[in-house]
Length: 318
Ligand code: MEV
Image (cartoon, rainbow, N blue to C red; front, side):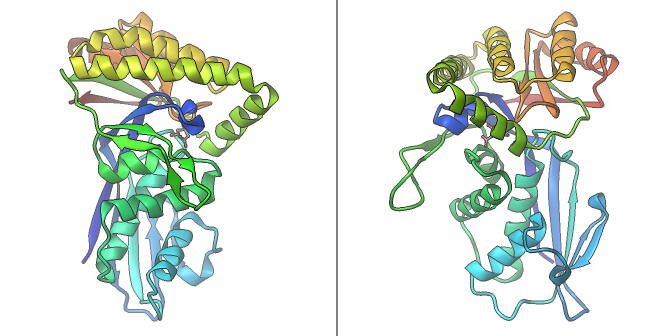
């Protein structure tokens, strides 16, 4: 029975500006994950069971733009799988939806891996990543590709969006991993407010279109923060990341993608002793991250819960 799993992710630095060609840093979060199990179906049709979203349906009954159906149809067509096999596909995820932790991309990646082994069409990580990127485009228009990349490779990534090429595909960007000179601890806290990335990305685009020089400068500033952060992480100077998180958060506020709830959590984390804090991902809701001394993690997590966080995850970046 094919089984595949994919982790959640957080963006450490550089969200939104990454859509405009600036670099960003992201890491997998293995405490949350999407899991897909595929078995042969006793029925004549492929069935999908996703109890977390109360979905039990025949594939053919779902609209073709349904996020799960779209992955399966695209996969079958791309690999010439015909006639469609009869499969029982079970999907479970502990990644909160629309929260900046990459739930959609993780389900896509786990589903692609499980399908590829169910129908004996082995796929490389590169192919999975490219495929998952195409699915991300269906759902949120102009994704940078960072979410599917960090989730597919399940390792820290320094990511620059490939520029669209006239020949199709992308050119000029790149994905590198980065080394963590000395491990550091983050508290991730969920506002509990689901906020589709598509909306905040769309609003940033409107802002950019209204005054490109101004917002290009803001993206440049974010890009500078990311470069500094990468050097500090690699050199083991992680305590210096706190101030960089604070400036990245302020720049994201100026892009209008924070929210009163995110700002309250960021503020509470700092008051409780975090070295710095920022929203992570699309913003407007979803998650924020706080950099802490390991021994302060519990007190910062407690303060975040008191300030309204729905849940927290303490994770070590190593
Ligand atoms: C979403 O996790 C990150 C954004 O930068 C969008 C993207 O990169 O596609 C907001």
